[in-house]
Image 1 (cartoon, rainbow, N blue to C red):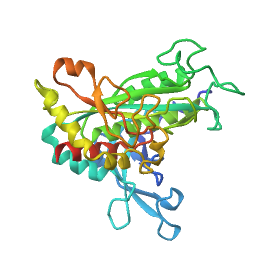
Image 2: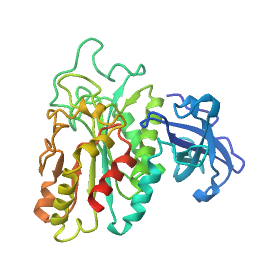
Image 3: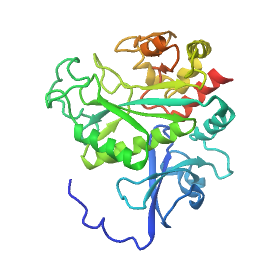
Length: 351
């Protein structure tokens, strides 16, 4: 990585605001930069903007403008100084939320049930590929690495690949103000996980999307491609999920286990509805991962249990022991929209 000798030049009181939005795929993001008078200390200082939706699969060329509305601000770990990253929502020209905008509905639900004080923590799994995006990073040119077993939380050049990227991403998230909670190497070689949270309400989606942007942007510096595909390699290899940990105030207090079980039982009656919201292809992507093998439950069945990673929902052993805490929904895919995931969960357990 060559350093950029121009990045320490004075900005003469101006800041660069990098607007980020979710594109027509519902799982990728785009971004562009606006020069502003600085410093920016409030979202109210940021104007709405627009982009060419015909180039992001969000509109046609004859009516191409899509509006982006700033909703949250993070420090920019790449440009640094007073420069910022800006998470945005997408709106159609008539002012209605674009179909890819899952945040507006999520915000309404989180506001409606704010008294429940819902906390979320999401475990984002991902896989590194070389610059072509086709060959897993660090895998043999011909053939496959050894079977799964030594890679999970592993140490050593024969067991892990890409740690410099992981560490750079971790530090960049901390600098940006993303609530990153930890990281670890995953079961499949060149696959990693990081955790974001706990976040209250709408913050979960904002922080996870920005953490994904930062990850892809860091990997770009190393000529590496990040994949959020839930089953990036066919065969006897683990897939990638976005396990979502959930609690309300009642669940976190004495006697909370009763509320945890009630919430899970409510979710059990809406399994198919949840599956449709847990990946951007209405379950097709997740069907490749949720097979009942490789630490997953079958996509066709709902189950829950204590410390059971083969269930749809896991209650941690410590929570059973304490009698309160949280539970983990293991069904969301690695390419899910966290706004959609947290929305359907809140609908199911609070309405």
